[in-house]
Length: 89
Image (cartoon, rainbow, N blue to C red):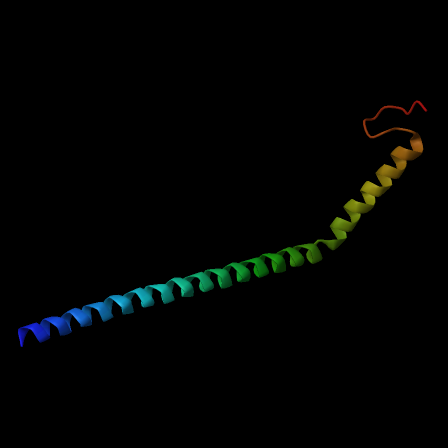
């Protein structure tokens, strides 16, 4: 009677160990997917925030680009290079 109960307890222990390993593996996979989902959500929020920033400041950004183009055209028209020196050719 004691040998059969010992063998039953041993088998129960092995089953518990296997269940624990499988449970740990499942939770590890679940954690990886949750982390990946969170990362993708964070990247989407970041891109949404960047797009909103660009749209909110489109007039200012356009003005800065236009000013740069106008300044570059002025520099080219007056014969100065990017370092502020007169062109010799």
